[in-house]
Image 1 (cartoon, helix red, strand yellow):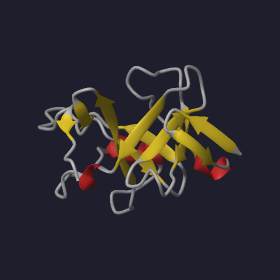
Image 2 (image 1 turned 180 degrees about the vertical axis):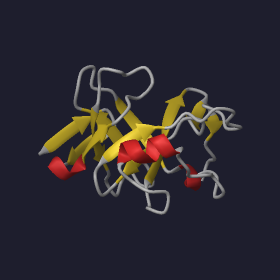
Image 3 (image 1 turned 30 degrees about the vertical axis):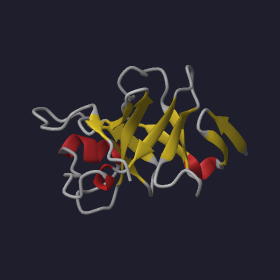
Image 4 (image 1 turned 45 degrees about the vertical axis):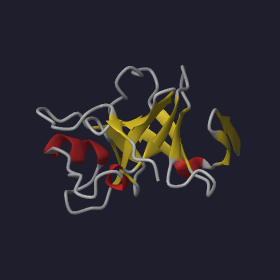
Length: 138
């Protein structure tokens, strides 16, 4: 299927659908997203909602910004995505672009189990990371 978002037009199929075990903050009614990528968008990807209000987010692996970023969930979150701590997960930070530049939310990343395509937004207590961490210009 062809999907048009505010970030471009992408080819997608059913294997690209992510079911959120817990909704993204502020988008509680949207539980299904397409994870979309294209060479001209790399290293970014698009997380595009399939349920109303169908939000569309630019996303980036937090380790692109901070190589030492701790990619860990709590026990309940690992259970919700159907993974164990030793399994590789896909980690995404939501990017915001405005007239002042671009930032990434490192405080509340999205973690996706790519084998089951189930995700959670992890909001760890006492995080030292910001929701508006500046993206470096490369």
